[in-house]
Image (cartoon, rainbow, N blue to C red; front, side, top):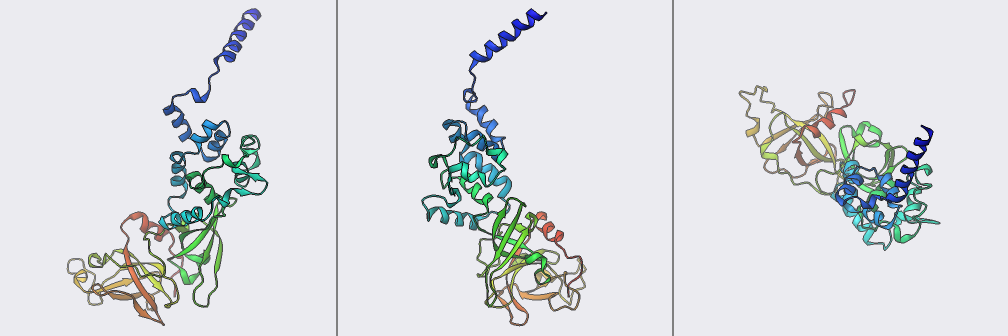
Length: 331
C-alpha cells in the first residue's frame, strides 16, 4: 500500500506541473460569469494579476452592476452631471492621487483594510494602471472615497429637527465608508450659513425624483387628476430667499363635503384641498388650498410659499414617508 500511494501522488504532481491551466484559458463567457459574481474588492484583486485581467476587471460592464446595486437609489441625473463636470475639469482624477502611493494601490489603501490589499495590489503601482477617469470603476471609487460630494435629497433634515419633519431637502452628500453613513451639507440661504449634518443613514436618502433645481418652481402636471385620498408631495419654502423642500401630504375633502364616496364631488372642484396630518387639528400648517387651474406659487411671508405638486404613484414612495411618520403629533 505505501508504494502504491507514492506512485499515485507522483502522478498527480506530474499532472499539476504539466497542465498549466490558467483562468484566461476559460471561454470568455465563462470568465465573464465568474467576474460578474465577484464583489468590488475581489475584482480589484483579480485586476492585479495581469494586464489582460486588469482590462477585463476594469470594464464598465462589470462596474455598472456594482453602481446600480449600491448607489442607484440615491444617484440621479444631477449627481452624474456633477461627476462629468469633475472629470472634464481635470486631466487626472483627484480621487486617485494619494501622495506617494499612485494608481489603484494608493487609492484602495484608503478604502479597504490592509489585509485585503497588502499582497493583492502590490503589482499595481503605476499611474497607467489606474482606471480611466471617466470609467464607471473610477466613479464607483469616487463615491466610496467620500472625497466626491454629490447632490441628492435628505428626508427629515438636521437629525429630524421638528421644523423639517416629513420633508425632503436637497443637499450635497459625502459617503463615510467607516460608518456606512453620509455627511450632508445643506446650502446657505437668507442669513443662514451652510448647515452640515453627520451620520445620515441610507434610509433617509433618495435621488431627486424630478430634475428640478430647489430654487425653481416645479410645473405640476397632475392637478386635474388628483382626488381625496391621493398622496402627494408639494414644494414649500419659508420665503423667497429659501430653496424649496418637498413636503408630504394627502388630498382632502372640501369643507362642504362629508367624505361620503357615493356623493363626493371634490374632484370636480377647482379648489384642491391639501392636508398635512402630521400636524394637530387647528394648526395653521394642517391644511391649505390651491387652485387646480391657475396654481403657480401661492402663499405669504407668514405661512410660507407653496409651489409645485407631484402625485405619489407607487406604494414604495408612500411607504417611505409612512416609515418616517413622527411618534407625536406636531403643533
